[in-house]
Image (cartoon, rainbow, N blue to C red; front, top):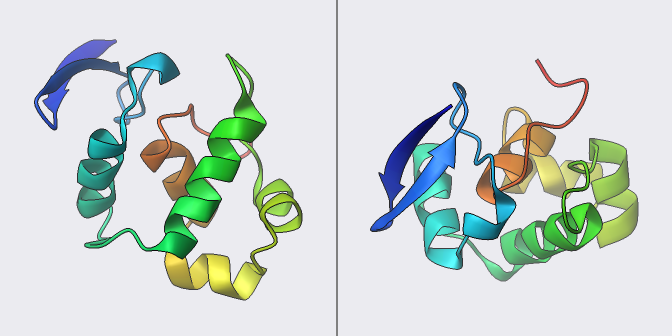
Length: 105
């Protein structure tokens, strides 16, 4: 585990850049992580998914899977891939300050 500065805050991250303590997450950190993932602007659609993921994970819970995100947030799989291209569940988890979802490589 290591630390890094994101949006002016020092946070703990793992070797893949996922926050290891979800309580350190802020919306400003989400914006910076999104930019690192190639998403320049977080729209209302992005925030709907991010907020769902954080609520779903709760305190210390697991990151939601792709299926859980689409069924729970009301966002279709096609739209999810449009919002978070190339691995949406993994990108959502990272931007939402959660751990890497189980089953993601």
